[in-house]
Image (cartoon, rainbow, N blue to C red; front, side, top):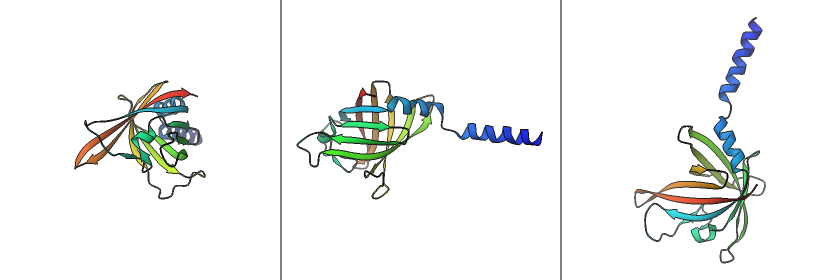
Length: 160
């Protein structure tokens, strides 16, 4: 009897500490290839923005992204020939549930090398504000002149 009680307690702890169902579903939806189609800002104007300490907004528009959720890795490719260097960049990502009722998630993106090692272990925290079978929107809040400034990145699904 004691063994059964211990087993039930352990099983309930494992179930309650597992990945939330909504995060698991999000990983299924995000799997595959996406194109970054549009980048916009919360404020009007022209801004010189470097995304992910890598390249300008113009270089990222039209970039292709691949998400591999079974190991939380991915690759994005800068395709614009005017951007140097073009080519593939590796990253790790994590989706963490914030509020199941609103559907908002924290999304952490960490650039890595081809062996999934990070140079400085730094990452970028974004909010995954929309995720459907065909579209995804990220929102990143940064500071501009001491005020919150939001960058919106709209993706379209290419294929799985």
